[in-house]
Image (cartoon, rainbow, N blue to C red):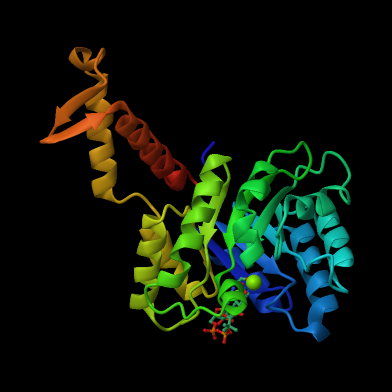
Length: 289
Ligand SMILES: CC(C)(COP(=O)(O)OP(=O)(O)OC[C@H]1O[C@@H](n2cnc3c(N)ncnc32)[C@H](O)[C@@H]1OP(=O)(O)O)[C@@H](O)C(=O)NCCC(=O)NCCSC(=O)C[C@H](O)C(=O)O
Ligand SMILES: [Mg+2]
């Protein structure tokens, strides 16, 4: 079943107000953060607040993701054990660099948790190991189901100057999308830090969608509406997709691989894309319970 990943909102696990407010927000997924959004002296508080909030529930249809600290940090082991017990939809592992990093989590988990792994792609080495990491996605326990771009950490580690068009980052973003698609993994774009700049945010959402991202990670509720709009099929896209599917369903087109429609060559692969568009639109429209 198609799972919309248009808007994935981060919040610091130490911010009890944000944890509560998130229940009312129109995000497809929530990342309750124990890592970089939480100061060292608030790590224990964040861990207990987040795990209690997840266990208490009330998040409805939101996909709940807990981002833990890495196992190499003083907090990682306790974070991961507490997150397993809280039973979120997914646990997000930061600074993943090799397939073996996934195994560090898998060997710490009991069988049958039903929890997925999400992986931050946010270091230069991760970019070089994308294929190896994506190839290790399939697993009976803790399958890897989503890549999350960490553009802030990538900028820090590579010392690029991203600029408004993110030109220095594009190759790494595209390679991550290619690795995700090669192994059936979802992929969401990095954050946009200028909270008040709606125009710049919209442009980056449009760019991310054009790069093939399923959605974007967010840092503020005021980014949700634009993000959900850009990453949802538009009325025009839905109409065009419907027309393509209907054209190939016509008796006279049954045996054809390619047809002409409104002056364009349309192949069966375009009909496949059209069906994906309609399925996503349907998934988005499905009542949230
Ligand atoms: C950036 C902020 C600290 C700003 O917070 P604040 O000053 O409270 O903002 P506002 O006063 O405008 O808040 C208005 C209301 O919205 C709520 N709020 C704010 N942010 C969030 C949020 N993220 N989730 C849920 N609710 C939020 C406020 O509580 C107000 O509500 P109300 O009380 O009803 O008025 C803050 O936005 C923030 O902490 N953002 C998230 C920061 C974060 O999580 N960063 C980590 C991810 S970025 C990263 O590192 C990614 C990756 O690793 C990489 O390397 O790139
Ligand atoms: Mg990061």
